[in-house]
Length: 385
Ligand SMILES: Cc1ncc(COP(=O)(O)O)c(C=O)c1O
Image 1 (spheres, rainbow, N blue to C red):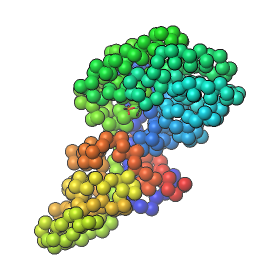
Image 2 (cartoon, rainbow, N blue to C red):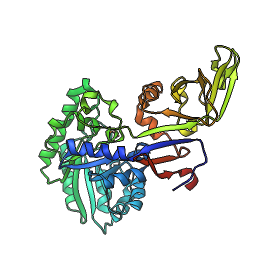
Image 3 (tube, helix red, strand yellow):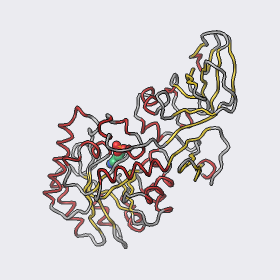
Image 4 (spheres, rainbow, N blue to C red):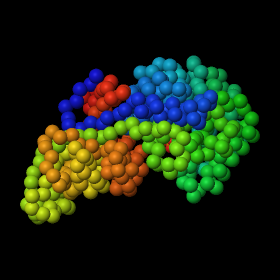
């Protein structure tokens, strides 16, 4: 187990993650293939440990965005099914095939590169169809048909899957667009008339909201729901599932001071104490860790006391006003599951989505992993660069 020498850490509850994966599999995916999306270092929670739990779960494989991430996972897990969802460089198809990593093919440029590659082992490919996300993928049926015909002729290529991605699945007011994407995808699958093993389009929101339109798919690709972020959607969509929160971000007080009225706190004097004897504690977490300046004025908890972040968040620290004194060394919860510190409050303040905040927690924040409240692993990437 790694060590760490800092008063700030993230706790990740691996048993709750495992629970969430199995809930989605048992309630929705059932006998179909289930990818766990582990992009962005598993949404910031650490891909080595998270993929370890996927291996123990009822899910069938993992999906990442880049070949580097896939190769990192392959180092630890020689047998797990890995799909790279993003476009890889033309020179890397051989490396992917040698490492048994499935790849996305999203345009004719990729097809031509595969034709030129010297594949000595099977390359499993998934054709990406652009049904309306307008990011990557074949947009016209003729383009996809040509790609398919070309790839069929390449030795050692296994055309395993076809997939697309929905842009509006979270937006209840854009049902028409979502259905247009689903129908377009269905048309591609039907017209191409190829025995694709894995047909997938469902991120978390599509999995939870639109499964009734997707009897033709054979695989799922949920992300945020397995990380416990069910509140991204209205509660009714996950009401049948027992989804649990999987993390807390914690730290401890490193400095305290009692100020007179009128003291200026942090850069640019953005906060002025309101009265005499105002109690201010300093917490060692800052924007170099991924804790943004826009979190100023959000809440944290210390021994059941709610504190308010005051003044600008610094690179390595921020200051908090408490009504009653706290002590150096007291543990604080910066992001938790309660009404004051949950990730949705923090995301609202930063005018972003929880996923963006999570992936920004960087190497300086050690991750501590728990199963049934017992510490089972600790990762401190900073000391192991
Ligand atoms: C192609 C693709 N599939 C699946 C997902 C998982 O999405 P979500 O976290 O919304 O479930 C993502 C996430 O960005 C994605 O880009």
